[in-house]
Image (tube, rainbow, N blue to C red):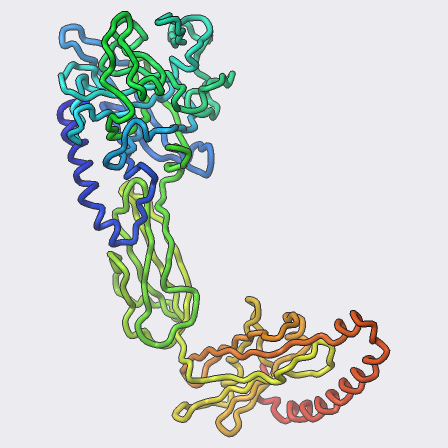
Length: 527
């Protein structure tokens, strides 16, 4: 990092901490294990962006590019023309090297050198990253901090073709001049972390067995470089090659961030990364926020205040959460979308059918949306369902719903047409009905209802409808029996057969009267 970028990084860390109360007030979940947030960034002409061109899972991945080729300026003693594209994963305060169990990602390398990972170490523990060498240009800055780097080139630590022997431990090394020989990248295929197409052991993840080097020393590995497995760095035993100095890193060293990136030191590079996971938890796999609606629920409310509670989270940060409501006529309740900052209410909502809409946008500009319908109805209108015991084997024709209407409600002869039964998500409509003595009686086809019922001592049937301009919802509980089924289980078919037949005949006599009544009320029947 340049000095300006170091300051920017520190500022972003401070800004993110200051934003946490706001995110919490919006109901945003920030439980990402040891991770706080992430960001996409680049240096020079590099880029980092979400795209839907290819993906390991879902429909999205992150495209990282580093065009052209960087060079080392011996006079300035730094790299020039360095381009990078990166994903930065910022860690919670107090996270140390010992908290890193594993890091994985899926990668599809297009050209050049595959992505590597940097662990930004806060050696002096002051909470800021002040490196000895600039992470982009390699310029000596002289700060106290450092970075652990793990690259494709050195995995596995026993490589074919070329290696450097330090303390009898061989390390592989990628040489772009030896194209298609020995240990080189695979292109155009999804692989995990540091794998190539031969899928060597210990290359599909970054963990304690991964070979790393300390960025302040020489890359290579060459003399004056600090090379060792991650577990060696945690134990504080990594020594400089051809020397006795021990790297100032151990299990308790604070880590500020993880960076997964491509650069152009070996030439132009491009790769897609997806399903980035830290300690086994996939944290980055798609660009859209996670959005869920707690309230309003998919239920019926009493007229009045309706609760609103929205949960929105995104590892890249939530920029804005909005909501609005449509009525049954398709009109918006609010002239402009409302900004959600915490649990609130929709005030004085009258009876009706509504659709609630909410949107969450993250800091990258991607938006998720949720829609949910709900109703507002009065409950002082109650219902009764007859018969109270429904025999699945009987031959009755009707089930009657009686709607008890309190004084003060205006009732129309056609109100019966709005009454519906709801059973297990299925809606049944009435066949005919009549208003009589402050009550609305609606007949439902018994055979149609029986098809939707299962026997039980307490079967709840929901009833909805409209009296005048007032929507209502209520339910009643009936008993559903199946004596034929019980009789068969006891072997009493012959004994119960005639009795059931007699009951059915009696019910049919009653139905004859109902049929006559239905004929008299044809003007109220549905067309």
